Length: 438
Image (cartoon, rainbow, N blue to C red; front, side):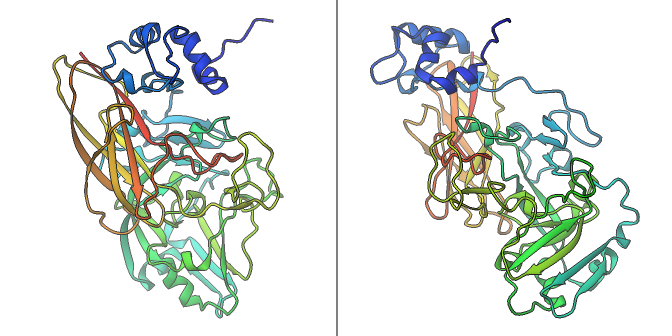
């Protein structure tokens, strides 16, 4: 049997410093502190295509950003940018590369795709679509979408929607599931009604503490006896001003691939709680236990796990507010700039779950020093904060631009994905791109 060649990522996952030796010939070039020097620096310089002005700050065992991404699978879907990265086709999953997140409002064609089940094939007249509210309510409600639009106040908010597994690719050892990097997120304008208004119209009965969401999608297996994803949120979250039932995205009818004709938007929490093709909301007196709510599904450890170890029953809580994150949207990773360029103009976005973002910093010397970026004010709660920065560079060569966001509680992005868990939720290491000058 032929020996399988290991990928660069696999080499570094197994033993970063040994990988340095094998890939860059750093056996005599790695100092006792783990930084580049001698033969290792020469090997790295050849690999990235230029001198490394801040090599003294580059730690050993770090895969250069220019070499960290695998080739993307071809992607094609009606109405979608072919630059999206295909992560899976059963169900369809595609993420948005960071350089396609450069708009103030994410266009529909650049918005990520995440399905958990099989979408309904024919939804018919959108305004005839019916949603029911039942369970612990005083007056169970069934309402057509057309009536929903006219009966309740219409609102529009620009808010981030993010997959709970965004950042999964950065866990070591690898976690199960689609290997999202940073592109399982987008910020769109959502038009609809407040979920709060609809629940209060049905009358919230005493004892209700949790919601349960159901839609018209079916189980991925095609077996009608199996239940598709059904998640829910604490009632307090459902009653927030920005939790919505929506039918429009960026001023257009909600596309079927994004849950049209109607879906939930539960901002700041994992996107799986924002159920697509919404048909039913049930109020319960217990934490919802539907598909996707138990075991390790959309749950993270209470006490840290040894990476790669088996989960212990009782040590998991539901993933709720998403962690702080930033992306550099311009320049794109791998950009080459003319010789003599001495200033880098950067753009990007930062966001987090419930608390908001207080600061974003950028670095060109592998995190040895950081400079603050200028951030725009959000339009409303749960909007992302666009940011810009101007960085001086000392010479031609290879640079890594790093971005790091801080939330309103002072929590920063980490250098590596933290709090390892079997399903790879909540991975939010700082973002890195490579730029070559000259």
